[in-house]
Length: 229
Figure 1: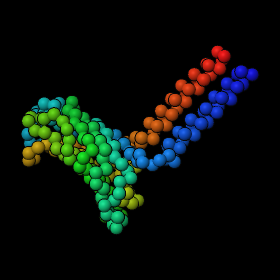
Figure 2: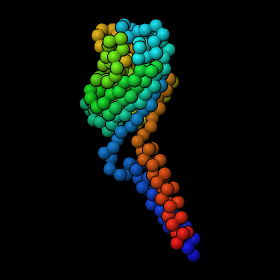
Figure 3: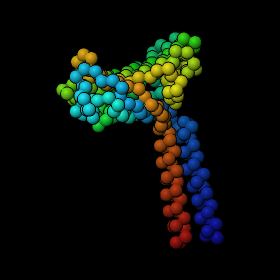
Figure 4: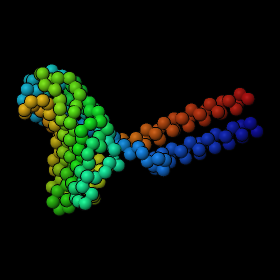
């Protein structure tokens, strides 16, 4: 009888917690958090100006072929500054944060000046462009990081269905070209290359995972308590 009560109690707990997790994932809970995170990887193809160092690993100057990795979080619910234009979405300051690593060099961006553009021009060209100003990072050969840009271009205009901010990244293989670049102070000082992956990690996934972990922990503790009683 005690085991039957314990099993029923655990089933009820499972249904309750899973129901809450589903609500979080589907967004039935308050929709204030519309943040989306993209993780990205790539490599250095070119280094220009004073940040170049032959064989540099990043912090001491950049050489070619260094790996790039990072992530950025933005609010996909940001309003379009051009609501009357169905083909050009322009969004001001949607990015909440960015972390990037090039070789052994790291830089971060906190909420500040950022612009995202989504151009949906069927038959003529689709573009996704991200521009961030105000990076924090160590100087490289006396130069400080200032701007990061990411641009993906499809000349056929066959990637996007509208000009809304994407909640999942389009496949890089759909773009004829993609480029990122980190610009440093002064003129002509930059490191740039191409992306090899762009992967989403919505915040709801973390919430769902946390819910499942809580479910397992609470369920096992409750069962042990009932057995001991």
